Length: 204
Picture (tube, rainbow, N blue to C red):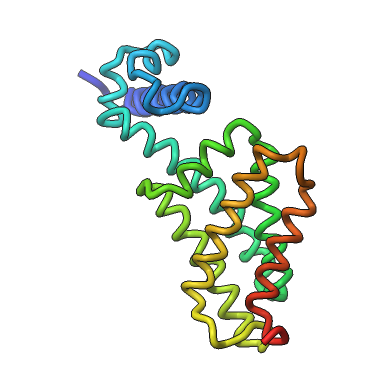
């Protein structure tokens, strides 16, 4: 029988096994793709039995969802931090900082970013969740700009925010594979100027 004093050790061991599986699966998914990676290979790389995957995640799809949720939260946290740290910044400044955070993430994770962004831009449930989270931040920034007279008021913030989110992630996803064609600053400047030209009250 397990004593109460053993529970923290068992919980720590369970968490470590889970994290080991997440790391092994992510490495293989990025290298080979989700469909091409059998559960048996993930288990072998993690040093556990195949049944351990099903015990912790239900199935391989559950493992993928857990990975994507972690990665989505990482990106969203970086974007959210911009708005939390600079609540009084002008909307156009927030837009630049927002875009720079995603570009920086892509630069820091050259192999991982294409995998993450491909799911973010797909209709995968976790990708939809990630887009929705980012859209909420952008929408609030657009509303702030409308309230201060910087942005035009004849555009619906929810739609403008969603259009911007997909445009930003789409161009950054392309740029990851074409960094020799366009410089980082060109990507950031283009996306910021697109927002300002489309939303600026002065441009009407």
